[in-house]
Length: 387
Image (cartoon, rainbow, N blue to C red; front, side, top):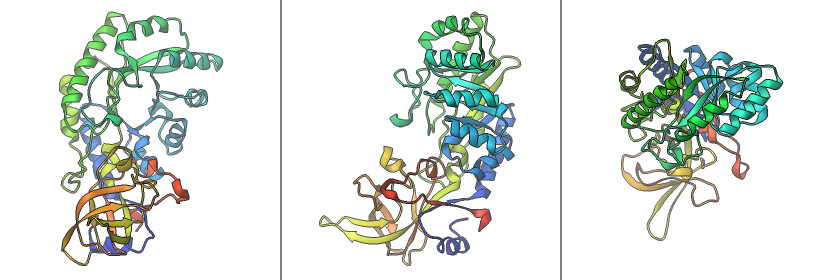
């Protein structure tokens, strides 16, 4: 859609940088995930940390998705956008007292608890308010997600979750915490996972843990396997919608679900990653003394931090180049930091001042992670059905 002459002309009139969301692609993605999850009766919670724009979250509500939140602000945003509190799961390794109180007062579906001390705090706050808190134990399964170290969350030395080696101690303590009601267990092993092997390993670990819980006389109503399904950053046009069918089939085939037990997922990037793009304009071109050709654009890492933060790569295209002649470029932003670089050695049609570039696959962790560094304004957000 965005590559068509009609849309390029319209977008070219909007001040850059800004995010553009293809709502038709978003809805097609939500159709796909709803269909495939529905085959097995799975419940999907949208991970707001990927993109918390009101229109995006409201669209999730329209498709019947719940919310996966990691802050009180996200809990508030989900409920304000119409997602029932009973469909909200609240994770986060360091919840504040006020965030916990918000979840208690709203009556959320579950707190995903990540430490023994957190259990004690939630119990005390629930007791003060005369409430019983439904909780799931987030267990660190020591499963390698085989992804970037900054977005791997299920290894033994991760800050996330309760070690599976101390579960017996946690269960022994739960008997004394009268204002907690354990309803399930929760996992999340990482993000941008593009092979099914880590999910298969997660199923095996989850099966063993469920057997252990049953041996303790604890029947779990819910099992939450988190999210982590990746997207195609290399050729997004060829694979705009992730392979949800294969993803959910792994859990259907490998996870031993007990009668009456519900299975929950927390998907974020795979739902919104491909529908968003960052549009930026070329301000200047320069060539260094070493012959390096640089296209300097008006977007920087305050607008899209992923490349600077952990070397992420986004496909970049020139939408308005007047020539097909291709040259090698560094694409860099205006920030006074050497890390403000979007790409090196990138083959592009020859760029000129004023050319419009798009950084694809930016719908997840793009605008949501933006900042005002250098006192730059936040990039605007434009929706395809509003043009």
